[in-house]
Structures are given as structure tokens and as C-alpha cells.
Length: 115
Image (cartoon, helix red, strand yellow):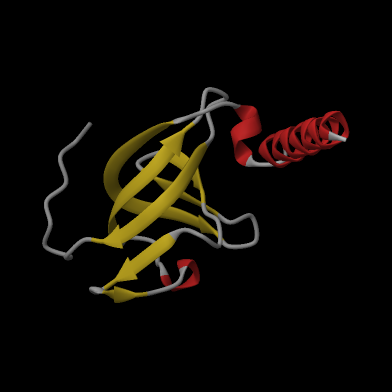
């Protein structure tokens, strides 16, 4: 019977490995690991339907998990407005996509450096 238990444990282990591989493949990681980066600039364009924004000429994707802070309080992506100065923390993927992790409104008097 010990051999039967050992076989069962192996089958369970292989099943778990396949399950984890399936979950891994279905996440955004499937397109490659990205580098976490930071930027800042003025919001130029908001595409709420596409969950995207444009800052300093670059397009960023926003997800429901993106943390948004407006005026020092928790906010929503839909509360952002063109012209707001923002800090962005995002992941840059090898395929060029930029997925925003955090958007924080900067005080209106903040001077932004030209890139």
C-alpha cells in the first residue's frame, strides 16, 4: 500500500503543477515580466471606456486594481480630469504596454520638469 500512496501523492503534485501553470498563463504575466517604473506629468487624455489615460504623450492602461489618490484621498479613475498633474507608478512590459499600479494627483503648483 505505501506504493499506492506514493503514486497518489505524485499524481496530486502533478495536478497542482498543471493548475498553477494554467493560472500563471492566464494572468498578465503571460506576456512577460515587466519592470516597475515611475513617471509624472500632466493628464492629456482620458479614455474611460478603454480604461486608458495619456500623460506626457504616453498611453497607460488602468485596471480596477489601480490605486488612485486625488487631493490626498482615495479616488477613482473616472474622477481624473485633463490638465491634472499626476505621479504614476506602473509596469512597463516588453511588448510596450504600460499598466498603472498607482496614480496620485500632485498639487496644482507642482513644477514638472521637461523630459
